[in-house]
Length: 247
Ligand SMILES: [Zn+2]
Image (cartoon, helix red, strand yellow):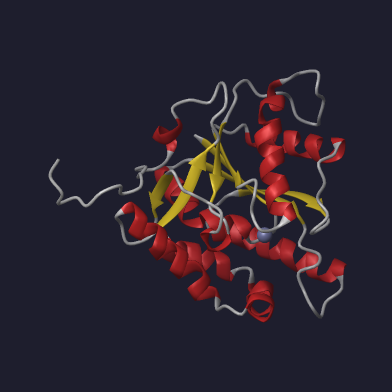
């Protein structure tokens, strides 16, 4: 299968779904990382062009861990809007990846680039198959499934499905570490260590799903999108009761 991940900023895909991407990679699926904005405000010391160039190289390195194809949309960081230009760029990215599945941000995450990029994916994915919507690439012939990724710290996100990332967590860390410019900046901004930022949610979501570490998702339920849980690697559901409890 072709699996497309759409992240608002250069390190988002690795942070929110890197372990799952590694599991797809392990199955032999084709992986695409679409990064919507160029991260050009992601520094307190470097000017926009310089930090954007650094982050482009970091994004390439992160994607390269899985041999993923990087699709770089190059919108300004924190200034993504739902416009004709952005929709066409997203639709063209869908056509490049020709995905069976698309992962994107939850539509009510903490950051406008996150929420809006998730919204544009969910609203526009079916347009990738419409011939009269012209982009550089030809239309695709299927409507991909859409899954929303977890939010930062899991706030405002009630997962419906999980992927066990116990075996791929170290790969996820390796990928996030490629975004070296962000580690100190994020600590200054939010006060957390990168290791904790990845490990605590992974263990918390793992606790919910009955495994050591997990990433959490929910499917976009819309017309034409069925069989939602079967496409996730060894998909898990929330533990709703104690396994020892007899019913
Ligand atoms: Zn982000």
